[in-house]
Length: 616
Image 1 (cartoon, rainbow, N blue to C red):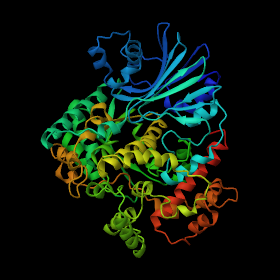
Image 2: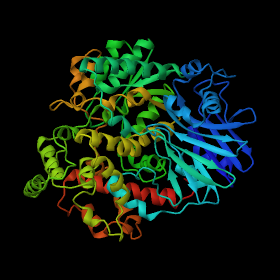
Image 3: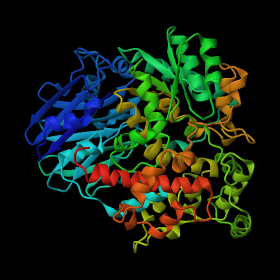
Image 4: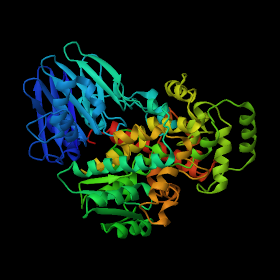
């Protein structure tokens, strides 16, 4: 796991890039220059510690900077009878590119973002993994090209200006949409995509080499029993690879849920000295007793990490500034603290990321398994609208009433607003308080949405496809990458293996949602591994006391940031509405009030501490 940076037709300071991204690569930093191309690499040494130095060269033809891990690289070498001078997966990428060109990507099981310079053609090949687990941002203005693993680093390499149009997307999605960023001329390379850059003419061609929609279009004919066995086999392969592709000890995060429980149970079969970590938070539901049942069953070396939010007020700016852009997901806070503590024990850690998006783990998926809300039905829409406006808003997030209220709200909407309401649900029903920019700021999102929504997929497959491309990519994977790498730690996600990503989407809906049961197939698999008490536990994730933070711990910084006369948010949101929110004068649920205020606070911290303050 590393940090990478580079330019074409532009220079930059190695020292400044190191200052910005040392946390991603504290072990070694090296540069490379050829013609008008400069690469820089910051290394966190995990695999082939002595032979994996980067930038790595292959004769006089290629040079590479690589961030990530290729878990099956030894299998690929054996499959194609490829021999190298090291045991590094970095060299494997160069050897594969030399033999297959861009076609080799389909063989890789891993998380990656890399750049290969062909010195003879003076061409750069840049690629990103299927899910977009490893970040890659680039600047292009037709005169120069620059890239980096983090936006804060890229900002130190080239002068950046705000792209005001993209902040409307942030307010509705809680993240910047797919390739969009807060800056002009800065693009995030989309998941499953690659770039070919002609460094002589400085032209760029982008290709989508992998798309999960292709696999949702496939229909597996496997029986439930065969699917269960195949999933078990593929999960074993994925976990075994992720344990063995490291010269350092690999641990496992262990919550009270089935995703991390399954990963831990299977991992313990390959590593008898597995270290596991469970966290508990002040004033939150404590999953530690459930996690302890798994740790005891598999005799792991277990550590319970007690996290306090006592320093939240002082840590808030630092944690959020790591993202280099406004970031809505408040679970970024506990994720940072967890990684910070776990790093004291291990550098590499397994997690359960991706299981909910692939297997149907969210409660909002249940109604979509019964009815395709994306289909137009005027009677349903009008009936639901009547119920929604007749019922008072709910303040209890986990209550049945709240579930029914949100269901009525969902059914009353149309098109893209259905997805926005089913997901992050920030400004939905209050979007009139977003200042009209004079153009359709959701146009690009709606265009992509319509492709999926109007397809022949089921309602469940549609929302899961959309979540994978939007929520997982733009939020959850970003959160985990930044939270771990800010602490020089690597997170590995077995559920995002090549084989599972290309098999699970093809399974029938009732293998994922059955009645009210979410993640049905995975729960059935869990009965083979986990104590019965865990198998039917509802999904919780981190229990974020956001309403309490907004009203107590963060009240002072909240008012400080959002009450100023020159607030950045005033360009996008009605200031009177925000003032009334702060003073509890808006008829709104406590949860939605907290969401909106947190969204604006995150944006304001970014503008003041990241964009305006060059020291970050």
